[in-house]
Length: 276
Figure 1 (spheres, rainbow, N blue to C red):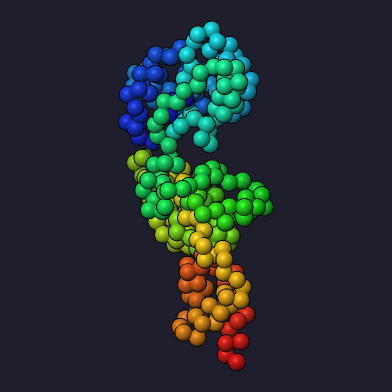
Figure 2: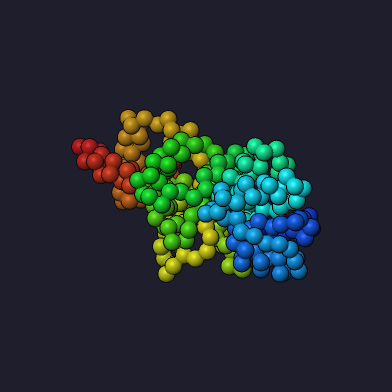
């Protein structure tokens, strides 16, 4: 399992280059994409496809070759194979057949982005790509809502704005970082609360490049605060500050890690009681 660059072609290890030169076969997610990497390092080797749609059919053929003593390097288009990329079925079959499977470690967008996120790294959960179906995606997020570890998502640039909106409605306005085009020419790291990231993206004509989103886990207070105590906090905030309903909702959303939209409705309901 050979990890390959996620953008900058120089981000490959000496060992990985040597392996790609010396194995009998290179199985690639996209032979055209991998061909560019091989050409860059002047690697001439047998290149065959192994992607999502043919992995199962080809696995047994690969196993036959491996059992005959041949060596196969599996690569994905970018990063570490099997991490939101093809390869899992082949690895599972090889392990069951008693074939040695070893990693040639290297680039991974998850770890690279996490290291510069400024969000806790002692514990994290890689969630990968969320479902494209809205209702299923919301159910997935609801299950993750109480997760205390930092959560890592992959998302396409076309869907990232809608996805952040879903996160805000379910997770609240948490600390986050959006990484685009990691290690590439136009790489960018946006840090702030989810609402701040959303505002930045919505002010752009379009969002381009692969997106990795890192979201802080829930905190103790957002899990434990009761409706009664939350109403007391809202009434206290209304009495203490001469802020608009929107500003009060934003302040409490950051403080308690709760959805701004829900807090807004709650504040509108409670304001008349405070004036009595």
